[in-house]
Length: 336
Image (cartoon, rainbow, N blue to C red; front, top):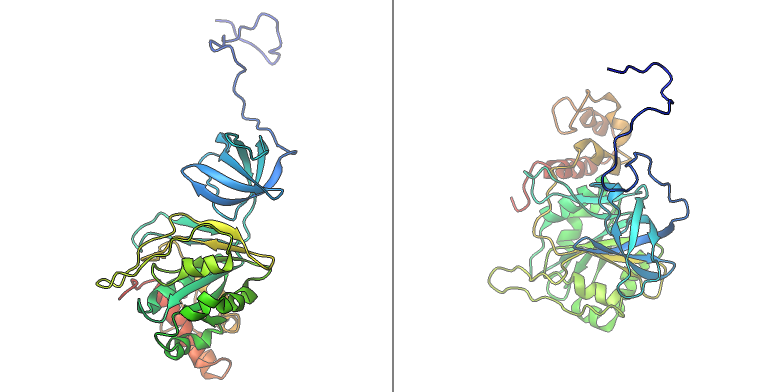
């Protein structure tokens, strides 16, 4: 058998023929330095609508990205036909690094996390004060997901004409979360949309809430040119709403610079993916008190240094209670 030494550039070296007649595969991938920048507006069965130079462009993910998926809010690089004309298709060749990410799991036993939105600045948690009744446990879970993903939370309380907001606001007062209270009449007149819009200007805001709380109605008021006018009706027996939004969609905020990202109504918000140690980052006033904690402290155990630190007057005890309530949410099912 012929053995070759160090020099393998001899003319008589045989090469395996390529039966397909195309070029051999290589691990070197093009850099696509001339790719256009875009933002993912919505995803539908593998096809992504992206905004490129104020023009909606239909695209699909390039094979070279493998299993990496793009979601609404992602900044992407595209090549191919960027005209946006009918029956044209571009390719997403790169997904840029994300500044924030909103994730959830189907339930607390599901190890598979789902990225809902990327690069949002804040999370608007929409909750009705009645019809259906508010679900504080779901709000807590959304807050934990927001703090973990780097989003600033905003409470939007709807249907104040049916019930007062005082009790629910008192529950979250120590968290210093901004809030807006709206009524049905204010939504119809546009006054509520104007007050909510003040909190959204210059930001990308993801809206989340369970069905029937008026989330889609509010989004339609914030983005009047949007053609999705289907608002759901609450089931009088179960108190649950009918889903009217089936996929996340980013819409330009009307009357101000910013983005409104509508997401499907949720019935549960799993936190199996959440690292409890990250929740403390949402409490910067409490962070110095953790320096004396044992390694891998859950901040809700007998040896936690926060108890003595708060007892010495460094922080309000109500803040520690709020922190531990959110940490317990990670271990407690929504609705318990």
